[in-house]
Figure 1 (cartoon, rainbow, N blue to C red):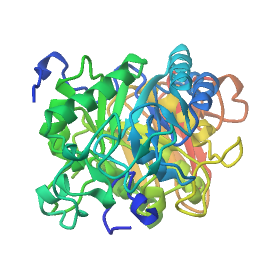
Figure 2: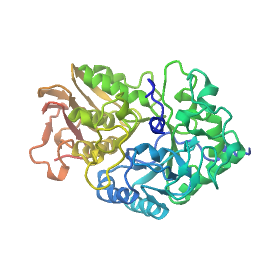
Figure 3: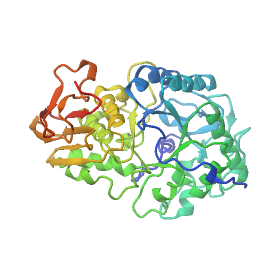
Figure 4: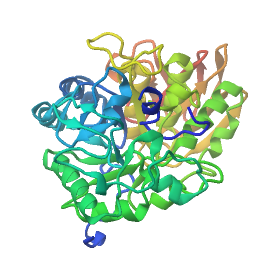
Length: 455
């Protein structure tokens, strides 16, 4: 791995003209609607995603689900094979086009919109037969692209302070598409339009950093209706390409957020989280996450292996007003290249954990209410959300008992991080007329109250 993060295709190397006016489709910098939380079900088969929308995501109040790439890709059991496309037909290990369309329909029926992870910066390295039967070789993908459709710099990126190197050379030996070409732009726009035609609501643009923002804007301008966009642009100090360049397109994944959470929660001093927005993208441009499939493997963020501390970080993300939250839900692994489980076992199901689903409801209930009544000491903190919610988090090894200022109206509230409001016996907190409440927060635990969950 490089010292810096790159993109979802990082591990692959370890194994092997006309633009319409964009003003018609203004950029959306947070998922539209009242339910702004996304769940990324990494490498989950499309049929299973549809079931999760019905059984868990819809009832919990998630607004969006992000799914792994829908293309034909190279063969192999490793997770990163999904990020080496061979063609734009949907014929991968996660399901075919019918399975994909059925998933979108099932999610919509459950009130959950769908974001598709789109790999448009590059095509597969090496040669072989794809998961849909396409025979390919590097720079030759029959029916999709030929040699002239790729950049002339046919060597790996070596200097991240050089914009041309980053955006025209090859990311870990993957064939780098010439996104300045009108033909390439039209082909990519056609693929993205096909996803939208199948009901996809939004697009997550993989490796956006390795394409100029102008090129991506031109691709977007060729589409009939681009919908919601989020770009993967990893920040690097002193690098030529920065996340702020892509905010006119829509949301941008804010990688510094997860790093900040890890430092605070593992360092034992969470007070600095009050100002977590400082030095990062504007709140209305940032998509936040505790981890993703890259960062959980390179150690830069907390992961499911951190247990309760990881759930605590997710709870903070969902409670704090900064950005649009994305809950990552993948699978257990010991080998970094390991692909997804073939059955029901081995998935973390983080999106379905009570500590997480309760906080999704919290997020929906508090909306855009401002942060109030901040308190922090050592490894514990609490804050209110302007009369609509209150949360206390304890990253320490012992329980915390104190009287908190909540900003909530008087009443008895359910701790939604522990119980559902309709089954809340033993998990209630009473707020007095002065807005204060005495509560005990367990070690590495959360107390979360909101106005929509009174006992």
